[in-house]
Image 1 (cartoon, rainbow, N blue to C red):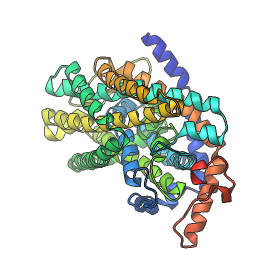
Image 2: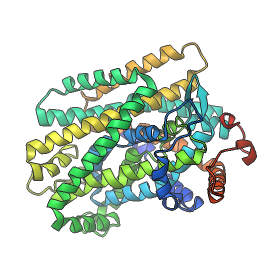
Image 3: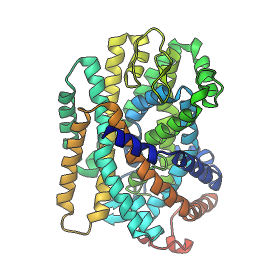
Image 4: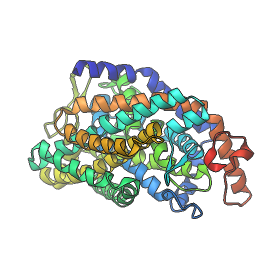
Length: 478
């Protein structure tokens, strides 16, 4: 079974998907004239604005916090360690690259989600399944995406987060993994039973607070290791382009792991971010597109970079090639395969091994917990898409809630590598469909951006008129 999972993961994450992700990011960046740079200040301003004329939906900041919850998780702590461990320091540079260009993809998919969203029983629902059906008029492909999303976000991805929590607590506090899994599963059950409003309320408090606190801790570590930080950045850049003598032979792995872990962490192009983006109440779809693009920066350029530079500056990492041969060994500490111990060891150089593990465990608990909440919402939205007009919707939502709780517990019991492979398969399947869909719908996203910028230039608060722009099936805005 393990070999089968790894084989399928290799098929899904072939070089073709890596190229597709990078190409889509480049296409949307140039197509929007690098809106992720031109409108950076506006992204921050829009975080705290919302359309008060709409009574339904959540605020832009709540949507941002929920998206950030989905993005900031084990990918920022454990995912960065695996990227370095199997791709070398240069993998982080490729995470930056996919984040920068991926912000263009994130803008496009979030804008499309807003354009084609629906009001379903007092909640805004949207995302790839909705814009594939309405924009591309392909019901069958929308259904396929929705099925992949329910399986990936409901069953494959939550165990990745709970596995990271269980492993960290087992190493630090010597608590049995199944006990940690049981507690986390119970807490998740209490939150998801409250629906999107409760998830949004928890996310808007926990996610920003933990991200800021974690970055502050990372900055302290870097200040204490200031003399070696420039060398760490130099090592990243050299390794990223095959200039490191020891790691030059794994350049392909460097790029692949950087892109894979970058997309897993920041979700740009994956198709999950737009599901949350659709829930926000805004007067123009582009507003939420800009907000979601900004969340990609927070995730990768700040939180992931903080983890990476800590690990690299303190040299608490190993690097392995595809066959498992050790190429680079950690200095002053014994480490095995890439996992949360790399980050714990980095913090441990400043605070001691015990306190380093404690801080990482607590950070991982909050990061991963909020990410699981976001995953549940992604799965629920796609379940509603599939069965929302039927009498079974309420029952199926409860089945999903039980399934997510069970998956969280399951993740605490399994080996990390298998769990990550399943998570990668889920992410990859969604990314294949979503990226192709947003490329085919790019004309609609570009049209919305031109409408927004024209109104901004005229000094107006932009309003969206689908009929005026000739965009069909945008029923909500009509």
